[in-house]
Image (cartoon, rainbow over all chains, first blue to last red; front, side):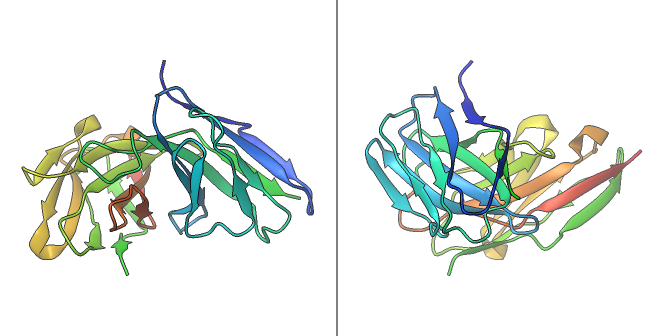
Length: 116
Length: 114
């Protein structure tokens, strides 16, 4: 089955540690996205990538980093510089990075990160 | 700045009752519009989308939405709610500029009474 997988489902981090969240898709989509979800605030875009080896900052990129070395993979690293990292993180993908007809985003199941 | 507003944070309906969830947006041109649903602890699932053409769009699970340009609205409706519809619902629109970066509303949490 085609889809998006995220791992782990739950992740605990001590303050000062970097952690990496995995996102893999087998939909052959060019574009991938990372969102952060906090209660009552909807989803906010952290980073997005329109194509392999390219990525752009979203609205809340500070304290996060990404890479896009393969089409199917878009890992997110939450660094110690992120002051309030406890949140639900969602990865998404779409056929292309352009806002064109038919180009909806598909979402993974999410990773819940808790800082201890 | 572009924005998406979902005025209702929580809505409670009885099973079998009709439902309307409100969504208002600010956008320079005719936008693409989306409704997503999220069950607790899960990812988002696309319910329906509007790109162009007929302003009344049908989605999955018996949902529909109507795009009203004059009111900058894209309200989600269902004639008869089922207990399994209890979830959080998000309206979204792409940022202007041609890129597929979505702006989401804050969400409406739906509770269904038996």
